[in-house]
Image (cartoon, rainbow, N blue to C red; front, side):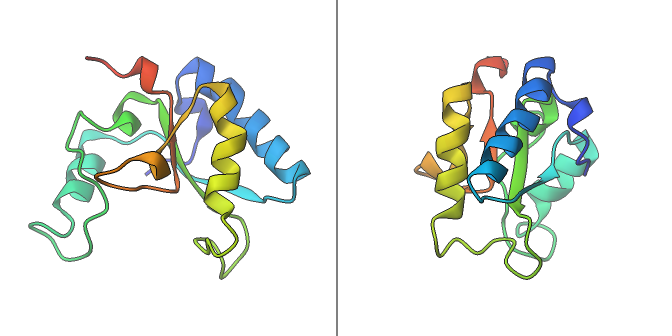
Length: 126
């Protein structure tokens, strides 16, 4: 899985650094953990918890994930040992900064809550 924001849609490529800077200014250290995914990567993630060992981490098979189109990124807290600690509402705080840029937050989803996920839904095909 890539963490390279240069692989993202041009609009998202521009706003990710702005979001990260705004988060940092508010004491929210953000690290981008995933950007673009290949078909093989998405298929492997979809198989996880179904036909392969591990927990289910996605309900999207290729090409239905925004990651496959370069219009999504995943993130975590850039603090070793606390990457996914949400005891202080870290992910919602980051989402509140990202939403004015036109991003959809996976933490708002009802069927599959994905707090470390942000996407430009408007650029998804179909």
